[in-house]
Image (cartoon, rainbow, N blue to C red; front, side, top):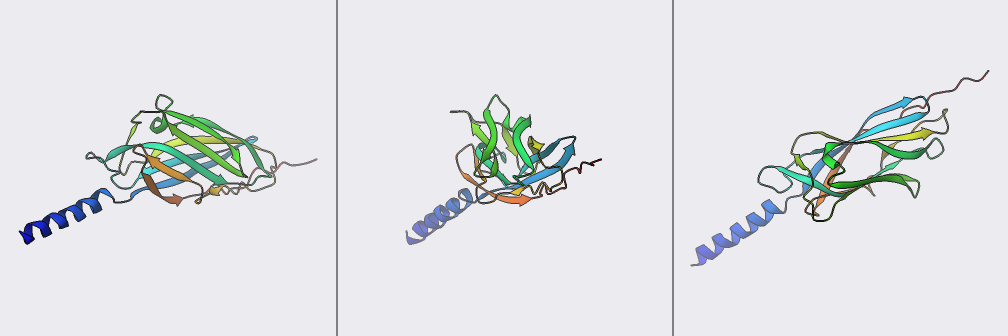
Length: 176
């Protein structure tokens, strides 16, 4: 009888370990570009492990993507591309500036299961465009790792690995 109780206890501990493993993802800043008087960058995500479903796929839930940037050189962030992983049918997507940081918010519609993501696949989530107010500066775009927070559709926290930056020079205007 003691052996059965011990085995059941070990199975309980093992199942809690398996189901409680941290969900992880790589977050990317990619393709920072300057076109005329605008600066754009892309946000990508790759789930790096099984977020808790039998098929290895689950959805993003509420997410807040935050970035530090050169506040003297860039302004007026706008989402100009929304990827299929956060489409308007399942999510409300907004952007702006708060506390000297750019934010992009992803809010899963109430009682919605979202769009399934597959482990190991990189998803282009957003392209953000900003106005260049100082063409003689650097963009200085970086992840704000303290304020960025990603949840899956089950409201479980996802541990992020931050990759890339948008620290590129803005165009220099020639004067006569």
